[in-house]
Length: 428
Image (cartoon, rainbow, N blue to C red; front, side):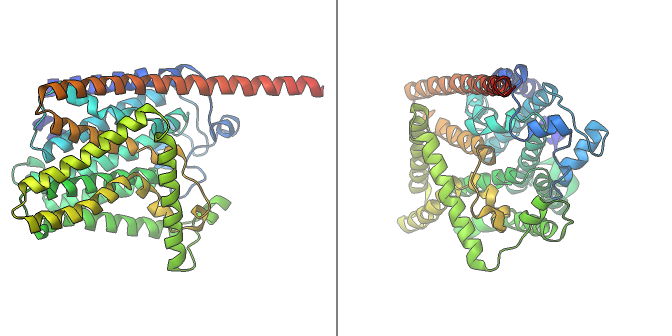
């Protein structure tokens, strides 16, 4: 995997890209690393020292890595800032692999443009990732599965776009690559289930990109058949683990109760979808950054429609592809929501809610939109420069937002500590 990456990309450029993304991540999460602000389950873990995967049987991979990290079957330790720095490095690798994937899909149209790196900042820094990064025990175990999914997608893209020329395919064969994809996807689910949404988001993007090419619908479907088979096999294995694995705690028993009928499954999916879109509307509709991103999303879809009408042979073919494209748009927007699909089958999610960390892969969707728009707008010099200014501004805002989030969480912790101290004084 890594050797293939290094063979295709100049090593010096790869090191510079990693250093850029890593520095952006460190600057963004500096306040989280420096200030002590435990969040959620961190309070209990500081008191009892139990691990993340110690009570959750369906996070087997997390438990194994904890065992290797802490050399303890039951205990876990607060290792911040090491865990946060490790997560920053993993995020930098994810951003590099994502760029490589998009370069393969788009034939390296913008591979020599340094400003393209700015399009991938949302992968490293986005509002939904803030909650995932602030956890002091969980952070690396949320980033590792995302890296696994990105590697699986990279292998799938190589199999589709570069099977004839890539050494990885020639040396290992397609069937071994597909087994590796299934293993990586299953590993991601055994670490942290929500990372799998990246696969659906990138699948929708690749499908929409293929529609803009001069190919028949049947040929596109045949080229992407391994995407379907791999994810179906992975989800089937994972659901069997969830249904028949050993339950150790009440949470495990509660989270592994199968619904009574198919109607209940549909209700779960619909309820979560409604909550998902309500969350997006609440998060993005009341601020200038959200309106700007919505504008980028509109440009993204218009550019796809334009490419289809421009490259399709005949109006009927273009119309059919556009109809499918609209479905792809819906799938693309629902990409981060598909994190809930493995859990939608279980009753505990019926009246649940979507926390920000469940949507932490939303940064992948943002990066895809920004990258596609960059390629579409790069033809006009003035517009390209304006768009570059927007990307720089958006990157600065993202870093500032993350530091503000860390400071606010720390101030809340101090305030709660002060209130508890005053209450104790009043009682005594």
